[in-house]
Length: 154
Length: 105
Image (cartoon, rainbow over all chains, first blue to last red):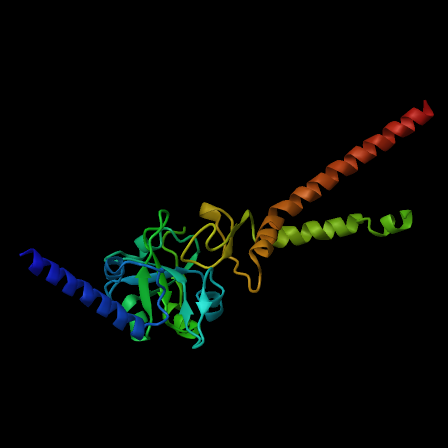
């Protein structure tokens, strides 16, 4: 019985490694923490397509590039763009931690359609924090504009 | 040396112009928000005004964090500096008056 359990555990582990390898091939620019455990990756990769993704500011291509920690790869695609997203949360809720008067809104589905991805990376002060990557600054602008007034700002 | 110092003296007119420029700006306070320092998931900006009287955000292009901090603080710092200059003018005026009284006495 123990041998069978060990066998299936190994099979499950192999499957996780395989999924991670495929994902790495498809989304080479996705932000990954070094030595991240496969389990963590699979759990945190679970944002539903209908989840909103929000970013504060005017969300022009230039503003995306100048964001803190943002990098552009050789294909001109962004990584490390800080956005807020979470399953089943309203725009008002997702923008509570964003102080900007204007916010850009799109969905995870729209980002994925253009080849990008959104990975949750919550912080103690911002549980909805995520990292957006895999799209060009111009595409990011198209997805996040026109911006709207932050519903939490009077 | 004295000549050079006199060249750099701000005239009353120049001080008036600085005051007017300051008064024409969007009402303060201006507060610098740097992405990764004050907040996440939004670009760096200067918040103008407070709560109910909040104005439009100012987004700068090409500015470092230090540049933005300086610009935001200038909205509060310049009126303070102008007040201090006015106070010092009064002190100088009082000292001159005291000197005149002392010489005459």
